[in-house]
View (spheres, rainbow, N blue to C red):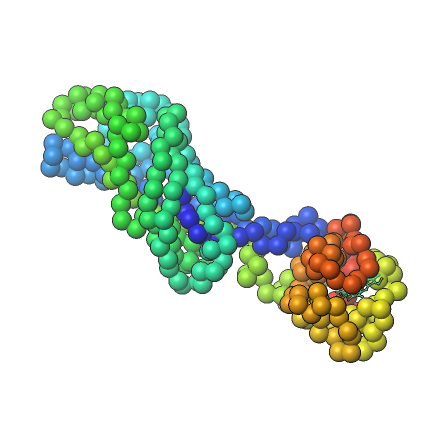
Length: 313
Ligand code: HEC
């Protein structure tokens, strides 16, 4: 349901199976979230109900899934809860709301900012797929927290949702002259991530992480694959530029080295993560560059090498 949301996949985790970075997955903070719906009986008595138990996730591809526990319905009258669970929801455990969101768009939403977005989703309820379309209000609460709420109200038709029979039974049991057949719904969903978003990990911190993971002694051996072309001495360029102090610096900034056009345009910062990606696949990360090296295939080698570059470079 949430469109243009959620900062995305940060760089693929290349080092030590994701110890450094993981694609940011988001999960629902149930305590701060609320899914409420209203009903009007006998034309005059309005009441608000909600579902007490929600769980949800947004994966790195931007698929949002919110599972609604139907037996957790709270109408503040016990017998009514029971009747609703039995006759309207027919003992079904879960309803699921799914939607696709644009992970890249949230990346651009600064902390403290808000935006409105149109969302299309699907509610799976009692074997039916019900399309829902609404405008949502999105607030980036912090780097790791996003709140999404209905901007106005969503209406769910009882008939369309296949709930007519159940609601008829409720109406008869409660001896009511009428219960509204369209249900206003509001939602406030708060999502959190533990994953490291790219913004959340400053280069310095990330480098500390990799030096904790990698072994510089082993990294020194890996560096033999580079030393034909690269030295660690400042100002000493060979076939490749000196790698003195390379970690944390801007790409193509070594003085006196003539870079290819590809590198001059690359505009990277050699964070540990960026280096890891480059060393795994140099031509993939900077296409058409002149470094005649296929790449390091072992993840451990990369972490060890970067630890060595940080220590010695
Ligand atoms: C056969 C020579 C060769 C080997 C081997 C080689 N490189 Fe390179 N490297 C180069 C060249 C040439 C460039 C510049 C490429 C360009 O300008 O397109 C480069 C560029 C780089 C850069 C970018 C530097 C900057 O200033 O932005 C890094 C980082 C790097 N190499 C790391 C390594 C590491 C680490 C290894 C070993 C695992 C390695 N290279 C192996 C030749 C080599």
